[in-house]
Length: 362
Image 1 (tube, rainbow, N blue to C red):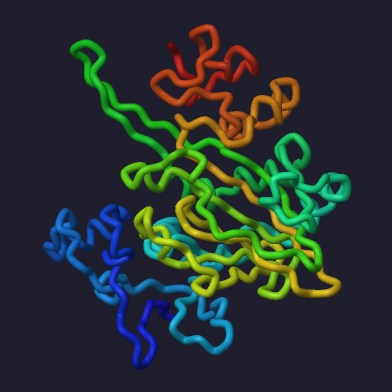
Image 2 (cartoon, rainbow, N blue to C red):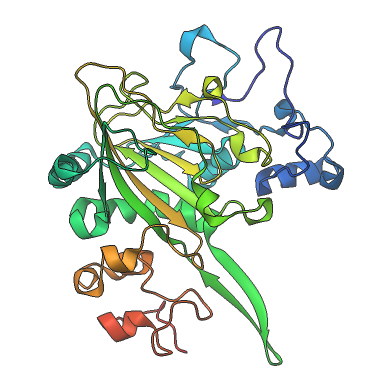
C-alpha cells in the first residue's frame, strides 16, 4: 500500500510554512529543502508549499495507527516492517524527514523484548515517584540501561536504528589544520536511556520536544533521535506514546495541542523512531488492569553533552565488559577531531585497550 498525506473531504490543505502567524523561524528538513529547491521555491521568502506537493510516494505497510473518533483530518503514522527487504535505511530516513517519525515493526524479536522486560522488572518495581511531576506518579522508570540490561545493550546497537542515526545525526566537518585541510566524521552517542512502566490510571504527559534540553535553534535540527521500543502491547488505551506528525517542521512559536496527537500503537518488539524536535508524549493509561512497558534509547550528535550522565551511570569498570560499539555509544570514544580525550589520548585505548579503525591518534 502507498501511504501519503491527503486532505480530508471538505478540508483545506494546510501548508508547511504557515505554522504560526507570529513565527518567522520555520525548520525545513534536508528532504523538504531538496524538494523545494527542485521546484525553485525560495525558502528565504518562506513561500507556502502544499503538503501534497512535498510528499514522495513511499511504499509502506498497509497497516496504520488509524484515526481516533472517526476524525479523518488527522494523518496516520507510517509503518514499515524491519523484516521486509523493501524497508531500507533510505526509506525510513525519508519517512522520518517527512513525518518526524515512523513505526518500525519487528525492530527486535519478541524474545529480546521479553528478556529486557525481565531484566528491568526489579528496577521498575523499586522506582520512586518523580518529584518534578514530569512523569505521572503511576509511571515507574529504569535508567542507566546499558549497565543493567544485556538486552538493552543489544537494542542500543540495533543495526536498523544505528543506520538511521548515522544518516541523520552523525557529523561531518571540514577544517584547516595549518595549510592542511582535513575532513572528519563522528557518529552519534547516547543522550539517555530509560525504561517506562505506565500503570493503569496514569495521566498523559505534556506534549514536548526532547531536544529542548539542548537550547536548539532551527539550524541545529535534527540533533537527537529517539527509539521507543515496546516490551508489552501498547495501545491508545494503555498509554502508547502519542505524537503529532509533521510537528518537527514547526517554528518555535507554534503551540502543540493534545487533539492533534495520535498514538503510536505497538506490539512487543515494535518501535517508534522519531527526531528529537517532534512533539510527543507518553499517553494516558485509561485501562483498569493493563500496564504498558517500553524502553527508550535516545541518541544525540557526538559533540553534545548527554542528558543522562553516562560516565556515572555506566562507569569504566562496568563499561569494560561491553563491546567497543556500545562503549563508543556511551561516549568513551572521541568525537573527531578531539572531543572527549583523556590525557590527550583516546579513552578507548587508555581504558579498554581497544585498537581498531575508529581509535583516534592524537
